[in-house]
Length: 371
Image 1 (cartoon, rainbow, N blue to C red):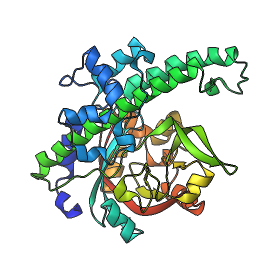
Image 2 (image 1 turned 60 degrees about the vertical axis):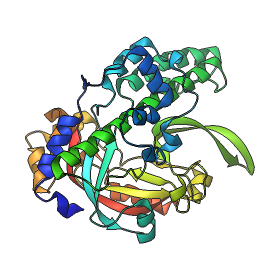
Image 3 (image 1 turned 180 degrees about the horizontal axis):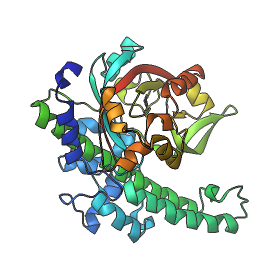
Image 4 (image 1 turned 90 degrees about the vertical axis):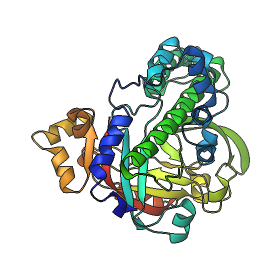
């Protein structure tokens, strides 16, 4: 509970900063993978990490797809991408990636919160990171492939960033295989970081009774799903860019313990304000293919944020709010100032008003490590 962290939040954040490498080129010297192991991570995802002692099989029940998306094809991932990813498993990275320790400030639905294992003043941890340099390289590699494919299949592009190919084409299947591998790398990465978060808590607080995973879900991913369109069930490729899944109560892809209330939806805000836990709805399934937003969204570019923060002591400002922050460099911290993001209260109000997610709990940060 929150009271258990009184006087210890600095030590806890320092321990997390030590145990979870962060920053642009962050890597680990104690977790080096050979080529065969790298391929196994891409195919197996989070179960690969659990088999090696990073967390438990109980965690896998609360991860999208059990932490492993089928169809991953390491042969579709370049050696350059593999080389970039190999030393980065178990690292946070940079940009808007973070580990945030907070607490449940407000509960909107006591019953749904209970089912999710949340209660007022309970300590929470949010881990936001993905497939690191491997995923970035997969994207770069396949943009080049897709630009050629668009010309090949006569697809007119309003913007080069929207380059694409038919899903069933060799290029389309190749990208889906590479993307699934990158997603599995991300699942394994977060699973390993979750393990080190638990170890950090125990190193500061002594034996911790439980630090249970509520949910781990992708964003920025394309998935093959069945949805009803114009009264007919169809198989679609649903691309959630800047979005996350929000499946309704009763959906078979939701963990059994949550099935009665809908899929957990995690919407982070910014390091100086708050974040939300919501659940998916039937309306989202009907109107947005079971999707909602995955974060507050930026108001300022990184350059604008740095300009707005010039001359300010951002870490001191946050400490005055009771939030202790560690970062790999001052640059990342100033790029992530609260003003750079929309107020997530407003965002949640919109998605709830649209009926595509239902708020369950509001989380307030106590400490954050940034890349």
